[in-house]
Image 1 (cartoon, helix red, strand yellow):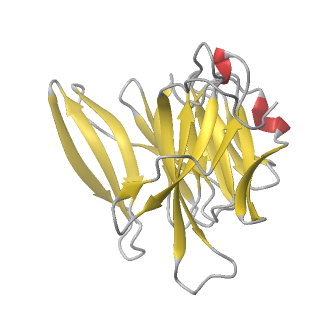
Image 2: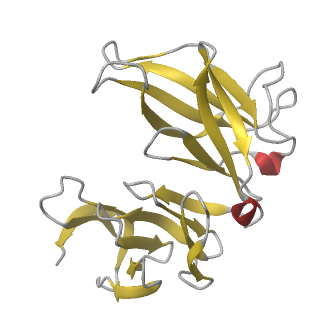
Length: 244
């Protein structure tokens, strides 16, 4: 059960994510910048998620968390990766068991992390990748077992359920228009999926001695580029593909 963190030396940071949230009663265009840290367990502390404030002007991270929540009581509850909804009101934390969803509530002069029911993804096993679409209406997860799942958010109604998308996931991203998903595997392959059709659109080509590792769609809204990193022997290269 999630709750306030206990006493004792906290564990090492295992993952992190930015949270940019505009205050409802704040001035237009001004947002609050937070960082979510996942921490592993120690002999005296369970797995945790911490939220800390970041001062962009001073490039300084607060020394103490604004809020701390216990993810679980076992080592398998240790956060492995975190995805934050674009609205800054929800975050998803992946563990060896599955995914936990927390709502961020800003009230009573403080911040609260409240666990939220997400039964379709709570017991899906260890996930390597989590990502939201830019508009926040879609959520995708890629498992260590190569299983790809794409959901409508926040209903978690299934759009795509593909058990054999890859051997095992390495990275994924959703395009700015929320129509495409790109995914990479630990074997160096990469695919682009048409989300609403729930099917693969194309396999990205590469040389036999190359591996595609990380991928991101462009975000400027003018040119539909896909950026990828390629590994060839000991050399890491960056490349981009234009999309029509």
